[in-house]
Length: 164
Image 1 (tube, rainbow, N blue to C red):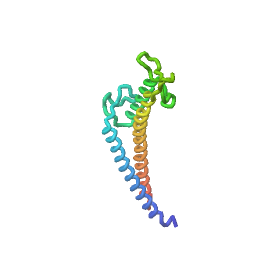
Image 2 (cartoon, helix red, strand yellow):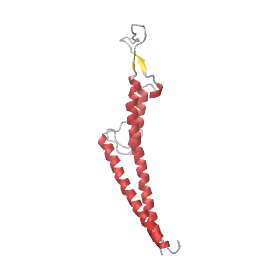
Image 3 (cartoon, rainbow, N blue to C red):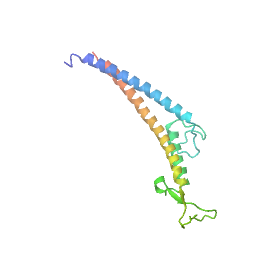
């Protein structure tokens, strides 16, 4: 039965592959444009010490390499700021110090504790790092969708050409 309907099956599968492939490329192109314009709209600029300096310092981030480089630069600066410690490695509270650098004590002789501002700064840094890494990952997935779309389109053309 399949032999008799070979042309019909090849035509249906070929057309479906072409439609799906072209749709994937169009959606991928839209997603690439949206991701790039959103990144530019955010106005995050390239640091001079970003790991992937394909852009000039001060230029707005607009590609995955700039995003990854900036994420690495933020992490490096944060580690420098916190003495090489990550959020989970730092105490949640630290003693309050007086002008001389000595711990302040309460009426019971206990050290007065305050939230660790250095530890809390990791929340902001982690948010920025994660957003930049997700932007770079989006570019990777979008690129995959575009290439799969191209492959599907080419496969559809081959199927159509195999008909008798």
